Image (cartoon, rainbow, N blue to C red; front, side, top):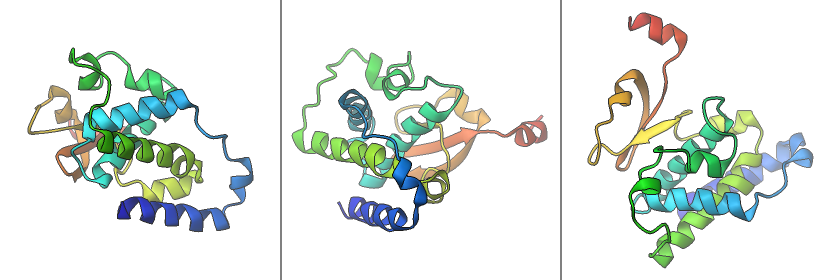
Length: 171
């Protein structure tokens, strides 16, 4: 909870100095909040607040990337991108406390963090622009070998795409 308070304080301070807040996007729809909260819950409910924030950020980075769908729900439900969406188990959260926390994190990301100017978001991005993550205790994905590790948070390793320069250097 301290992490969320920290991020709320950062948002408040940034909003005092941001002229762009007058043009901030309207609050997220309930459907977008639900999809993001589900992804946080099912992918990272056992993680710290930082780990859950990081999963939410990766989801949002994908929404902004040309390589992925441009809505939260389409990113979350894109075929075989997040293991919980195709594991055959119920998609209804069972742990009330963890579900409430996932909803708080989704709400914070969509209605506070994502309304900050891009430069502020970049400075506060704990994943350093990651588009991918995996849990090494559960998987060893083939695709991770061609990505750059940006950070390890809890049980997840976060990664980004290689730049053109990095690809040239590795060939």
